[in-house]
Structure formats: structure tokens, C-alpha cells
Length: 340
Image (cartoon, rainbow, N blue to C red; front, side):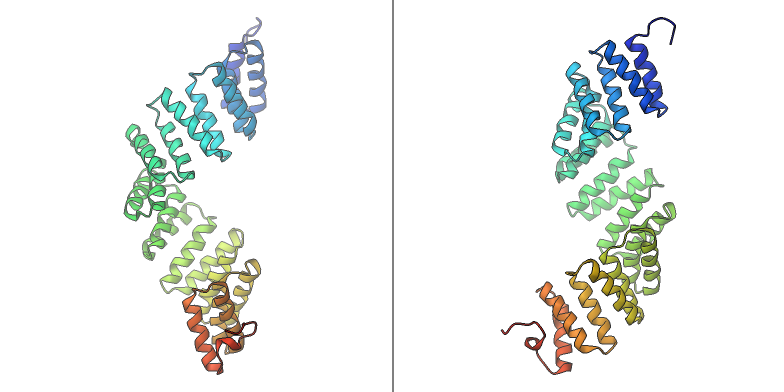
């Protein structure tokens, strides 16, 4: 700055430079000085809001964006910025209002439609989300995240072919994003199309070697392809990389059982039940392992518990009937069963 008394614009200009450099505290000091000299300087409040947002102080960011639009009700980008922060705060309805106000002032910015679409998805307004993403793509056909989120919207609507089309288009435009491959892999896996699912999970892992969920879901897919050894390797890696959860032990236990390692399978089912004592599939899996270990009494107890948790678990009920027949008794003889 010159030796003359700095103006509000001088502070604003320097603050913007500091903000771009990531020097948030110093930038905020300059924006403070700018609005102290001119309390009608909407850009000063807006830029300070950006600095607070980047620093994680989302409430202060909202306050500054609000002041900016109070000072200048036509300041569309401030409405957009406030919408972004409100979405991060999971205030989706308020975010929608802000995005719509921003769009009213500038109908040519694809980011505004995209952001509103993301908020619509959070509220499960899928048709409106699709309209917004399509408009974003109309304005910018090279917007991979809009295609990706179209895939999410169509997936949640149960329209697999459209979801697959848009995920694939997103991957074409952004081939280095592991989340895109992971999402498409999930779509394939949910449709029992396991080979392309495995390929997509593998690509996600190649791009992000610490992607624990990709290892976990690939493990499920390769187990369904009849490859329990590879599944166990993936589940092991998921355990090393990410947090433990009941279904991870359940699925590894199932793969171990498929492999014939029944006692290790029991150990994993035990771990799963320690994390979720109402996981019917873990009781069922442990029952299967106990049958293989010729521990029929314990198997019957596990199958019975699975049926108690899920009355519609037909496979567990059939397994229970088979074990009870081997033991020479009926369901009513199970420990804890009430008379019919």
C-alpha cells in the first residue's frame, strides 16, 4: 500500500490477495479494516465470509454472507456462497432458497444449478435434482460432477440404465476420480453383475490405494464370483485401512466358511455379533460353521436366534428344521422357545 491513508478498497484488494494465498487470518484483518472504513462494502463482507468458510468457521461465514446480501440484495454470488455453507451445515431447505435466489440473478452459471441439484438430492427431490443437473450440463457439457450426480439421482430412483450411462460419462470426463469408479462398481454389484464391479473397484483402488470401502465391496463381489481366497485378502485389507464394523467381519467369516476354515469363520462371526448383537446373518453364518464343525446343538441355537430376530428369514428356518431333524426334536424344544 502507498504511504497515504489506505482506503477500504485498498484493504479489500490486499485481503483478496492474502485470501488467494491461504493466509486467512491476515486476510480477515484486512477485510475487517475494509468494512470498518465502509460498512456498505458488500464485497468486504463477502470476502471475509469466504475466509471464515475456508477456515472452518461456518457460522461466521453465514453471518458475513447475510450481511453482504443485506447491503446489496443483488449480490448473487453471496447468495450462492451462503447456500454452499448452509448445505455443508445440512440446512438443505435454506440452501435451496439461496441457490434459487442466485439463479434468479444469474441464469447462466452452471455451478448454481449443480449446487442446487446436490441439495435437492439430499432432500430426495430426485426429479428436481435431475432437472438442475441437466441444466448445468446444458450450460457446461464438460461438467463431470453433474453427470456423476445424475447417476446418483437415477440410482436412487431405481433406474439402473440411466444411472450407468451417467456414471460412465462422468468417468470419461474425469477418469482419475476413484469415487466415480466406486459408485459404478456399486451399481454393477447391486445388479449382481460382479465382474465389471470387480474391475471398477480395482480401478478405484489403483487410484486410491487406501480406499477401504473399495476393498470391502470388491471382497463381496469376488466372493459372489466364487473366489473366497481373494475375498478374504480384500476384507483383510479393508480391516487394515478402515474402521471395523459388523458386516465386515460377517462377510469375511462367510468367505472363510466358503473356504472350509470353519473355526476362523466362527471367530469372525463372534466379532460381528460383539459389534451388532442383532445381526441375524451372523447367527446364521455361525450356525452354518457350527454344522460343519459337527456342533449341532450350538448350530440349532444360532439358527433359532436368527429366526427370532428375523421371522421372515426362510433360509435360517429351513436350516433350523434340518438340524432339529438330525437332533430328533422340533422348534418348540429349543432353549428359550415358548410353547406354540
